[in-house]
Image (cartoon, rainbow, N blue to C red; front, side, top):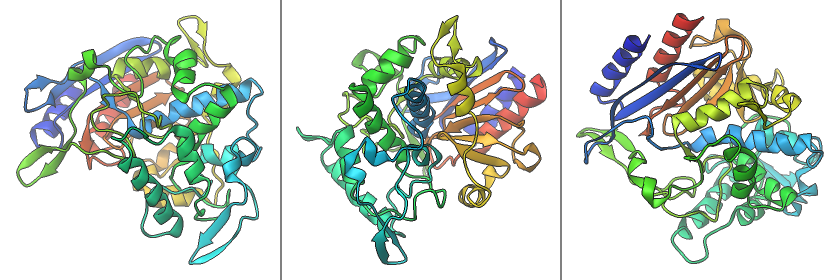
Length: 389
């Protein structure tokens, strides 16, 4: 299996589609394969390695979902309650569809945030809500390097005043819901989002390389970000979604949707905890019922096509608790089994749990434009499923 995976990685990397990658595969709690190829830093000829640190971007979302459901299990958050019950800035919401603005008929619920059915948009110039979201993110970016950067709570307060793209619960749309959950967790727990994650997940899981920034002593292990160009791969030092490229200071905005950095080994501990229904190395991290709930989809039959229209490769999947969930493996474009779940990130990182077969797959790379699950990670997952199932 290792030779096949390395061959796929070599073909992809030597063709110039990405600078380097690594992958870790675990089955029934035992490591099956680890391999890497290429560079984390081309200019300095630093190879991809097991301890390479990646910007997870949207692969942060499953951690945010787990944190939310932990508080649900403690009776501190109610999924059916309105978000405004916790975050008053979401009172008096408005929908703006096709240029027509009106009051919402139904309030955003916590469940809407977990299912991406809230109507809260990422920056997008095609909708009024998306344009207003873009203004919030512009302010977030403008304040990144000032002495008054936007905080997690302040971000939610800004987003609570923008127009929704549709009636809450009506449609699926990928947006800022996970970031709002980060703020909600702060209010309910009385801790910063980062401190809550540290105490309840990163410390007990021994995820010592995971957080919202990279300490100076580890910064040489943070992979560079690349993009294809006519001259080959070029490093792109870009801030994105209000997050500093350098990840060199603890941010005021701890993004539940995109902010974490981690390694394949660290993230595999989170994946294994979910695989074992909340237990890691004999320690109970989450109640089993919370984990079982987490790995189920939440979209209606009318909403699922909206997920598939956005990402063709998501055919056969539903979405819920900030993750994809496989419903029909005969419709997928990658080898999966019913109940497979996980998510991926803007720069190509990928997480998959296959509960039927006890397989956890963690993939790392840092490549703009690799797509939501690039060809390489699909090839690797197909190899893994063929060899281990």
